[in-house]
Length: 384
Length: 198
Image 1 (cartoon, rainbow over the protein chains, first blue to last red):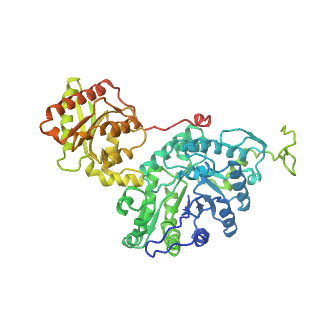
Image 2: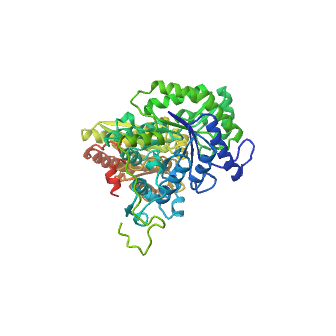
Image 3: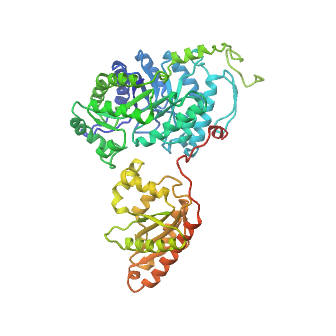
């Protein structure tokens, strides 16, 4: 099972000191968190994608991923999420394949729609088309990574005629894709259709939402013939704050909870920890809570934690990642591994995908049938 | 058996809004019995759920008792909604409760609309504020909507009783004539081939 952290890169005032980090500080802090995640022996670092303040998550995650690829050795770099609605699938195909090469295959990505209405029109889109955009754009991305020459026509972008997305995916194997959604059954269905992973953020919402969506995804994964329902690839988010004594954790986290833009003015910390998977307490409490996730989603492959939001100081977040790495994850690895039946697969990695592809005979590498130096030109006949 | 949920938005205890709700309920029990139906009623005092309603507005999901009420509303065969008139319109609390429901929760649900107010000059509030709301939500408000002004609880009570009787009979007809509504467990599910086809 893979463990890691995910960040949305919010720039939030620390309510206990009134201090707001600069964008520059927060961006450098993000890099430091990723390095710390590797040092703490975590497996995954996933960055959000944002186009509006108060966030500094990159508008194009591969920029950060490329930097982190050079700054780390083993860490898998992922996204939480890549906006499949407002990005051009052609650019996604190109940029993520490129960073896949730079990182030696340490890249996967998670598709999300984005729930901030005003962002869509900035990119010429409409939030009401969210599902349709996710379906069409991903279908194109999927094709661009698997076919060397693509001729395509759809609703949301200009047609492609004899187009080749470059670079081709590393070893001819596209990055593994997760689809993230809180409660859109269409997205669970989409993940199941392709045999891709399904990720539920599992924070801010009651576990009943998570259970319902994962259950649908698993049933449909089996329906589409990718394996048994319990072999579907499931990832979960989670949010924790830990101190040795649980009372200390609650006392320290409360002002951040009370003032966080996503929580503030709503239910109390106690209500929220009862109704959602948010866990504030001792490392042992976190271990028990996370093991409990398995009871409503089954054996799953990836667990990501949100550690760095709501204005928590960087020093505290680094301590939290240390605790995660030292006291929580080693126990969870052991416990989850002991519970997992042998036929339930691990999360796919580049190496496992290459191995699986090898088993069904690698496709022959051929040069795309275009002018190999300049690509096709307008004046070419374009009969490909 | 007809499951009817009564949503009362009164703030006092007792409130005239709840008094009107109880009057309607008494008529409904008889009217349903006359049509061979038994009544299983759930009366919800929104006042007790005011904080959870606002929490649900902020977090996006109802919890605890409010979640049970939302489920009861989704499963109900009909609703009776009684709101006080505040500032010439539906009470903010009642509106907020219906704001937090998932889309289509009320689709096809017969609803009897009722309101209380200090003066009968507010009575059209039922028609310009409440009826459009429930039409938008896809519910099926019956023709009669019942307004009870302060005066209606005194000398005007005979006319009020007539309106209550008429509204209740209309709702009982709607309930007795309707088939069971289907479960919403798989709401929103579309097969992927159909999604791909656009």
